[in-house]
Image 1 (tube, rainbow, N blue to C red):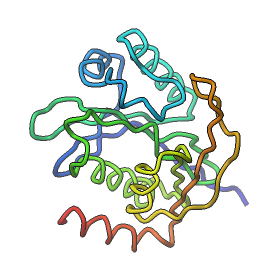
Image 2 (image 1 turned 180 degrees about the horizontal axis):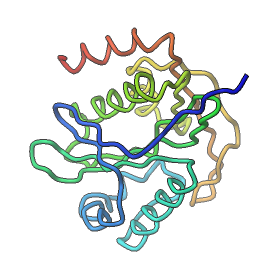
Image 3 (image 1 turned 90 degrees about the vertical axis):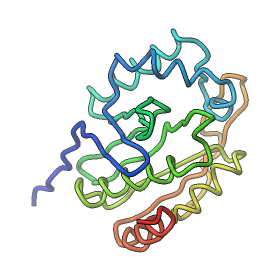
Image 4 (image 1 turned 45 degrees about the vertical axis):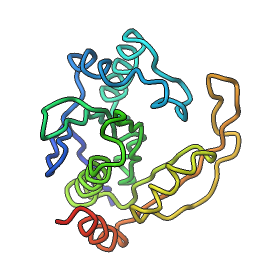
Amino acid sequence: MAIEEMRVAPVTLEGRYVRLEPLAQGHVEALSAVGLDADLWHWIPVPVRTAEEMAAYVETALREQASGMALPFVQVDKTTGRVIGSTRYGNIERVHHRLEIGWTWVARDWQRTAVNTEAKYLLLRHAFETLGCMRVELKTDSLNERSRAAIERIGAREEGIFRNHMITESGRIRHSVYFSIVDAEWPRVKSRLEARLGL
């Protein structure tokens, strides 16, 4: 029996607070305007510190999109229309109906607002209800307690730690904590997120 593959294509996802638009080369300047804060990249293995590095970051994301591995977005604040960060689907497995949500950063002024929660909600809803995912993965640095707590608050289940998973720019060996949400859990997670967002 042939398995029907997921069809993952660029799309705009819109909520009350944030709009996720397909990432494009033209977003480099706007991303650089808000994204060269060193604190944003503290837990990222390869930080972005200059406009040139942001251009390379975008080029890599678009190359991975062209290869079918990723679908990157910019996050746009609905109130101001400003680009305030980026996120993406990555490690897309069309045959096995799974993907990862990650590579997420939000400019400092929009942290601890509804933006990140709503962005995750939009990405999860599209993944499960439109793409037909049976599994969505999230991961973070094992030392990043804030990120781990945020992923748990969404309703994802911690699955374990990939030891010696990455080498960071500083040379530190990073262990990564993996979380997941599976399709049977999505209705519960959806209700939880909608309650948090007042939907």
